[in-house]
Length: 75
Image (cartoon, rainbow, N blue to C red; front, side, top):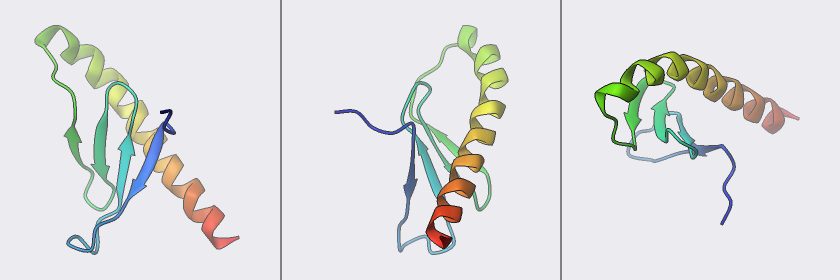
């Protein structure tokens, strides 16, 4: 099954949280309310530097995705 690159997540146990799930490597969930990230991958020390460089771009893309989705809801 193919999934979109990003998905929105919601949970009534976290009423103020806005979750964006990144479904491609490196998979993660970011809570846009507080920018807390949960990585769904295991990384070794060699991957860490590359991951840190790419993470900022992925977090920006996650925020852009959320903004685009909210804009579409408003239409």
